[in-house]
Length: 476
Ligand code: 4AD
Ligand code: MG
Image 1 (tube, protein in one colour):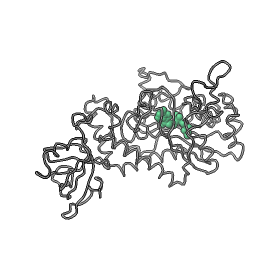
Image 2: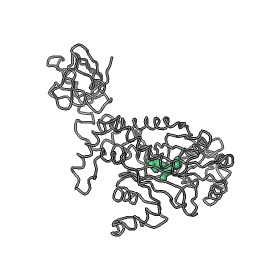
Image 3: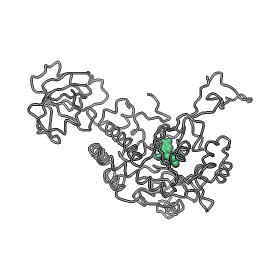
Image 4: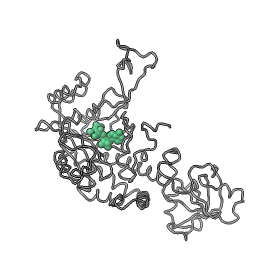
């Protein structure tokens, strides 16, 4: 029976017990020491191949990338950083790996290079850590909401609504492209996409989530989300995962409290369950920064940064205050911002990062955005100009959460929809929640990959999702 390396490394040496391990060879030194990894932990198991145990032909096949099965006794290790090692009594090759051809050499590869061989990058320490942490975060998401009594609601991926009203949708069609139904002017009639309806991949499960919350009380969604924006940034994917809680009888302040508690819970979970992976990533960043000039290095290490988020309340400011801070900043005065600042602008990532990284040095919740730059469903504030929106900005990331209290007043919602040109007949399902027993409610969306970026200290969103979908990556 196979024992996983993670479990084995926790065990005490034993004179009697034999263990079997299977994994991939990271390195093989002096024809004697195999560093073996099976993905269960960042740490390798040292497998010692005693002299004379196997013949030369087999020794040659123990190469980086090969998979092997080893059996033996666990003994105390004299090596640094490991308490035990496996003294092999049998070694078997499961799968050979030609060292001349194997793209992953036992040396440091750049993330750019690894992105090009994304199908193999899981085998590196960096990516195996990232994806174990991604798993832990996903698990913690469900645990958090389950503990609070939220219902996990599965919202559709194929839908006819554009929840964000931004028109960034991937069309889904059942039509054969050659003989698609045409409109009078000859253009394709997309209203016929899906058996007589125009359909797209969801940009957000929120609208359907609101239907659930106004009956079940508190729900959350957690699924893939699609945005057909042609943006090649380190923060955007065409396919990303989003967590969207929605709560009846909750206002914007309850919403902020929940989002803050949620983010802290996720961080705490990973610090408790993935300490080895975090320590590795923390160290990786420190090594990487050594080549940077002092002023380009991060002020805090990864684990320090996470501790700051855990131990401090998030700053809460209004959009208007954010604009005032930006206008008074040395960066603005020295014309360091690429985009101009004035009340009414959509905050650019350079502005968001100034607020969190230079000014407050911790996560910031910004509320009360101008209604013209936000979605139609947000609740209007009494000033008539702003809405009860909240974005959470995180150091190194920028916007990590977007949310709001929803407009529960039918007349105001209808007026806003008319203003932005959303036909009410397409939204009858949604409007019914306001017609029958409407309640104050609110919710938010946490971009899962941005959260993984934050927790792992990785800097490119393509490196925290197993198979990135961006305008330039769609191979497999
Ligand atoms: O701010 P957004 O667009 O808000 C919504 O979709 C709301 N319906 C959420 C809600 O209130 N239920 O997106 C929410 C979050 C952003 O803050 C960001 O973290 C992430 O989703 N996000 C993206 N992540 C990766 N790639 C993209 N293209 C993203 N667009 C948004
Ligand atoms: Mg947003």
